[in-house]
Length: 439
Image (cartoon, rainbow, N blue to C red; front, side, top):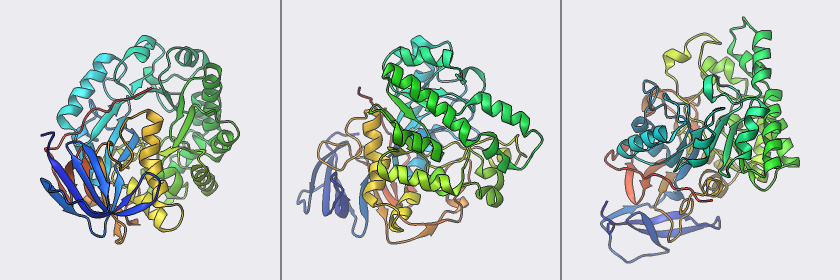
């Protein structure tokens, strides 16, 4: 992109870093925001009239599974990044359980090359921990962090015992992100409930105690080595209350919209489409997670976008795979909650942009201010539209929120100063950049 190209957004309701709003203009040059003011008289190569729209920092989704390489029949980096652009997600952090697994520098390099040629939005990748790849975990670059599957996994990505986890926590200093479920407890309960094909049993097999056990172990090791820890997709009241009592300054946690807005009642309505890891919980868990998010016990929001085809999901439990898509609906779901009074628009933006940038040390992201990257989304907070299967861009073609009537849908998404999504149209020639990570 020509570094001198200018974009001018006029008459937007702009969310400022302090959480207040300004109706005014934003001037972007190249990939950067250069001015935010009530009125800017400059000319630009492209101007957007944003009258009636709200301008937010682009969403950074810090946990997605985009399935490339090896599982492209479910999703690939191009289709997933198109879905991101439509959902206002301008950057993502992607997980290592692809085929081959992302557990070496070579595998990481391959993903970065694929993303550079295919991704409409910015990208970063986790390195996956195995019991054998300690040098890779310490040395690979660039990565947002180390992903450890303490449960809900098989093969070499499963690192479930304390004696295997300890060397990872003891070596190096980069962020460790854990999928915290107790694999031994899950296996025992799988035997106990064998033969039951009702998918609702999933929430009992991988129960709240399995989540708490693993989170307690991760927290213990993090404290022992003062190691930066991030707890992925927190799902239970038990874990939220544990962190409320005992959360060191170097520990962060996230929650998904699914664990805030769906619960075990969803199995009756949508069957295996409600199956994910960790599973959906009770309405009580929903309430406690919401309160923990509002109080800052939980730091930010991720989707855990994990698509499977409808054919795969149609298999009877337990053969049905766990996971659901989310990047297209997450911002609208949360903004709809804000409009209903559950939180504020500024809080939603903080949880989905600024707090993620801070947590992962991603520079120049998450705020609308001079010197920050021009990753932006204009949303319509006045009109409601339902989630429709036929409008989804994710390759899997379904959503657990199908039929939900939402507001705050993105109208225009901007990545690095370039319009990538505009009123239903994708500019598929736009490319994001590899994210960098500090500290």
